[in-house]
Length: 361
Ligand code: APR
Ligand code: ZN
Ligand code: ZN
Image (cartoon, rainbow, N blue to C red; front, side):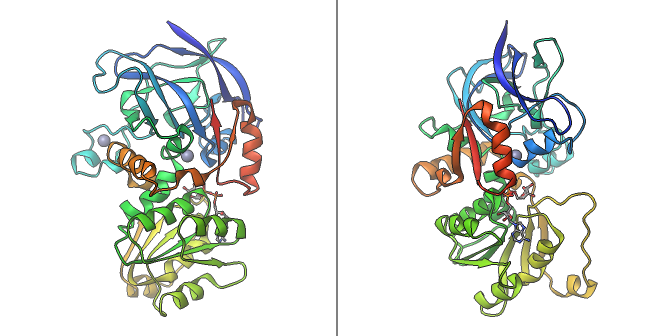
C-alpha cells in the first residue's frame, strides 16, 4: 500500500518551496511510517533549498519533528503503532569504528529508510537529513524514532530533534558544564538559547549571554541567563572577563559560526577552560591566531555535532525535565504555522525575527 499526503518540497536551487502531493510507501523491513504532528523550521532546511548541501533536488524538507507511529515494517520490535516519537537524524549503526570505540555520537554510518518517497510522477524525493517531516506522513528507519512521554506537546518535543538538542548538548554533553561553573554563550538564536538552558540544567552559577540583537538577549534572560551583553555596544571578551572576576568563563559556547565570534570564544575562556564550537562556519572562513596563545592558554577546544547526543538517552530525559517544568521548551516556539507557510517562515528566520517557527499538523 502507499499513502498520498501533502508535503513541502524544494524543487530547485533557490526556488521557493511548494506544497505538493507525495507518495509514501508502507514501511519496509526495519522502517517505520510516522504521522507527523509538528516539525520546526531549521536553517538547514533553507540551506537544502539553496543548494548549499548538495544538488539532489527535489528535497522533501523538514527534520525537527515529533509524531505518532502509524505502522512498522518487518523486524521492528521496539516500536508499535500509536507510540509518540521524536525523530532523529542519527540512528547509530553500532558497528562502525566510532560506535565500537564507545563514541556513537560520531557515528556517520547512520540508518535512514531505504524505500523512496516520490512525487506523483514517480520522481524520487531526497528527504532532508534522512527525515523529510514537513509532510503529513514520512518514512524513516525505526532507529530514527525515539519514544517519549506522549503527554508532551508535539511542537515542543520536535525541537529536540535538531537545534535545541544541539544547544543543550553543547553545554551538557560536549562542554561538560558542571555545578558552579561560569558559562558564556556567544550567539543566542535557537541553538545558543538552548545552550543557556542546558548550562542552567547542569548547575552553572553564572550564565553570560552575548548577542548583537537585544530581542535575543531578552529571551536568553527568560531561559536563565544571569547576565546579558550586547556585543555591538560592548567588547564581548572584556565584558565576559569583567563578569568572571577578570579570568574568563570556564566554558564558552560559540553558537554563531563566524571567525570573529570563534575568536571571541577563544579569548573569553579562563586559562584551562573549554571552548565549545557549535556554530557552523562556511568553507571559505578562516581563523588566524598566535600559536603562543593556542599553546599557552591550555584547556580544550571542542566542536559539537548534534550536541553529541544519543537520542535514546537524551530525548526521554529532556522530555521528562520539560514535563516537570524544569526545561522551558515552549519558550523556543515563537509561532506555530501551517504547512503552506514554510516559505514565509524562512523569511522571518532570515530576518532574525524568530527562535523557531513550528509547523503543526
Ligand atoms: N556576535 C554575536 N551574536 C551574533 C553575531 C555576532 N557577531 N552575529 C550574529 N549573531 C547572533 C544573531 O543575532 C542570532 O541571535 O547569532 C544568533 C544566530 O542565531 P540563529 O540565526 O537563530 O541560528 P541558530 O539556529 O541558533 O544556529 C546558530 O549553530 O548549529 C549551528 O548551523 C547553526 O551555525 C548555526 C548556529
Ligand atoms: Zn556507527
Ligand atoms: Zn536542523
